[in-house]
Image (spheres, rainbow, N blue to C red):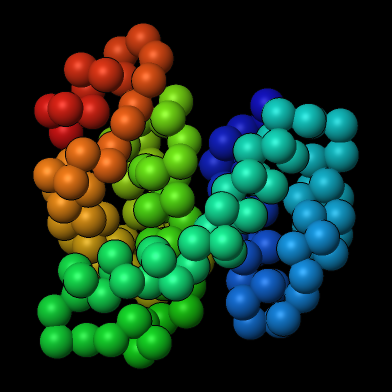
Length: 154
């Protein structure tokens, strides 16, 4: 895999194209993800899985986000912030091999690069609260060397 950050960026662009541009997941997989990574099958697989899970669970993830934003509504969030939060929640819940700290740090970096000046702090705060809740609900299941212990202390 070339780079997971590049795969996350391609997934974010793809999710944006689906959400805002009303493109199909098949079109964005072909025109954004596969075009970006050509022969890097691992990056294509990672970005495509992240895209599909994030799109499939958008309303569930929005409910999780809604529970953690004070005096605000999900539909009023900056679109990129909302998509980054959805994507990070997808990683927290469905990517057993990725440490929670990595997911949150990557989401913060995406927010800094693609959204507003204050988005990194906003995304960090929301994801910290979401992670705490998901842990209490026993919904975080990390597997692999170093992840089991790490996920219980983060």
